[in-house]
Each structure stands twice: as C-alpha cells, then as structure tokens.
Image (cartoon, rainbow, N blue to C red; front, side, top):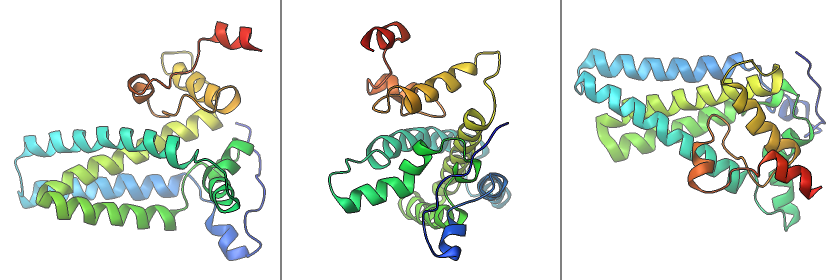
Amino acid sequence: MSTERSSTLFNNRFLEALTRTHIAIPLTIFYGFAAALIGYSLYAGLIAPWANVWLVLAGFAFFTLVEYLVHRYLFHIDTDTPGKERFQYLFHGVHHDHPRDTSRLAMPPVVSVLVASTLFLTYRLIMGVYGLPFTAGFMAGYASYLCVHYAVHAFKPPRNFLRQLWAHHAIHHYQQPEAAFGVSSPFWDVVFRTMPERKEKVKSAK
C-alpha cells in the first residue's frame, strides 16, 4: 500500500489537524451508530422486525443516491468564483490532486458527526420511529462507501468482480472527471447517464 501526503489546507495547526482522520475512526463511529439504532429499535419493539429490515435496506439504498448527487453536484460544483473554487478545493479538489493521501479519504469526524446528527434529527422528525432503522441503513451506507473509497485508493485492485469498482473510480480520477460519480456502485451513473465512455473511445479521443 503506497500513500502520499497532500498539501496544507490551513495555516492553523488545529484546523489543519481537523482535516485529517484515520479511516478506522469514522468506520467505528458510523457502523457503531447504525448498530446502536438497530439494536434499540429491536429491543424497544418500536416496529416489527421485518419493517426494521426493509427500512435499513431503504436507508442504505437512499444513501447511494445521496452519495452520487453530492459527488456530482456539490463536490464538482462549478468554480466560477473564488469562493466556490476554495470551497471545492477544500471539500474535494485536494483529493483529486492527492488521491493517495489516506488521511483525507473521509470527512473529518467533527464534520461528519454534525452532518449525521442533522440527518438523524431530520429523518426522526419526518418519519417518527421509522426514522431510526432508516437512519441506521443510511449510516451503514456511508460507512460502506468509506470502505470502498479507501480500498480503491489504498490497495491494488482484486482479481475478481470487485475490480470494476477500482476501474470505475480510476476513470473518474484520471480520465473523465465529468463522469463515473458513483463510488460504491455505478448504478446511479447508469440511471443518470454519466457512465464513462468505453476504453476504446477514450483512446481514440486522445
């Protein structure tokens, strides 16, 4: 596993430290949060067990859509003003410049916990008790996305069907940044027609 160290984002040491995290920290937080929500929902008997299962799956699936939309429209926002350019670089541009910096392959825990808490309260308010397993699935989806994203940048592609995830994301980084926005799955790229061009077409376009 080869890694690199990306550029400094803030002169303030404290702020700079907050921009980095070991992947084990967010995985522990979000898988743990998901397990706690599922456990509480089942233990308290708030809804039927089968409903818990379907809501967890729904939350997981919904995350894959959010992942795609955030990556496409927020992380790749048009940088037509200095403010937007700075925002895009802080949240995603630095990752494209230094894709092997493993300390910046996940949102810092402070930011991600704030976002997760906001989403939890939102789902709880809208869905009532059904929001508990739905949020659990959403958080598990995020943690699973982190696993895939970390793996494709930190490890060599495996010799099995998962190799397609490595290839898909590599095309986004190194050939067609305007395509292949799905990381954990290319499903939404198919739906929204942002699948990358075939390898043969890419070669002929050069």
